[in-house]
Image (cartoon, rainbow, N blue to C red; front, side, top):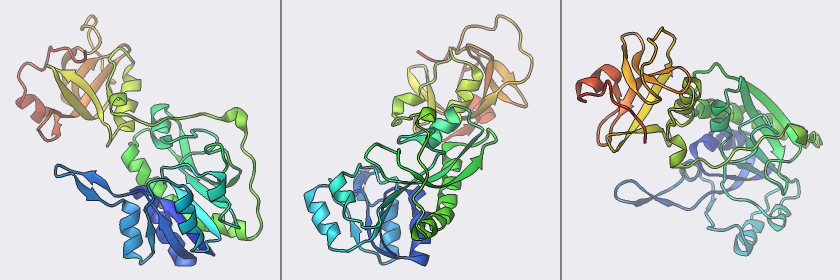
Length: 311
C-alpha cells in the first residue's frame, strides 16, 4: 500500500520504521525545523531525521492548506497514517487518500482524547492504558476504532518510560491494523459516554501545590518527567523534584503545614508534609546544578530541613 506518514516526535519513529518494512511509504509529513538549545540552531524533528535516513521524501509545511494539499496530491498516496503530527487536517486534505486516514493514539479511546494521553493516564492513577488505531474523523480522536492493545500500569511509570513502551507497541500493532483495513474492516464506533479529555501540558502544570495529597504529588512527579518536571519554590528559585514516593513510615503529629520539610528517613529520602500524608523526595535539582540523590543534595544546601517549600 502507498502510504503518507505524518508524525513529528520520537514516539512516532518506530511506527514509521515498521511501515517501511511492509509497505511503500511515499512521503513523510512532519513539523518544520525548530530552534533548539542555547545557540537556537534549527533542529529537525525526530521523524524527519528517521525519514531522511530511510531515504523517504520529507514535507514540512507550516500550515496544512492549499499549497500543502497540492504538493501531497502529487505523490498518489492511498492511505495516510498519523502519529503525533501536531496539526489538525481538514476534510479537503483528508479527501486526498482513497483508502482513508488513520491515527495512532496512545490511550484506550475514548478515554483521554487530546494531546497528552500518557501524562493524563499517570496523573489519574489509571491501572491500564494502551494504543488505539482509529479512523480520523473531523472531531479530534473520535473516529471508529480499528484496533486496540492494552498496556497494564504498575504505578512506577513516568511519561518518559511509558512513551517508550507505547512507541514500541505502536510499531507492532500498526501493521496488524493495516491488515484489517486491507481485509475490509470498517472499525467499531467509540462509546461517547465513556469519553475523557486531556489537554496540552504547560510548564506551570508542574508546579506543586503542597496542599494536595502525597499520592497526587507522587503522580505529578512521574507524569511530568521528563518535561516540564514537577517543581516547587525554595528561597525564590525553582526546585525540581525528579523522583519521590509516598512515605509509608510513621511521622510525628503537628510537623508543620503543607510544604514543611520535616526531616529525613534514611531509607526513603527527604520528608515533606502535604495536605494529606508525607512525600519523600529522592532526587532533587536546583537551577544551574545537576540532579542529585537526596543525601548529596543536602550536603550542598544549608538549612533545607525545617524550610517551607512553595509560594
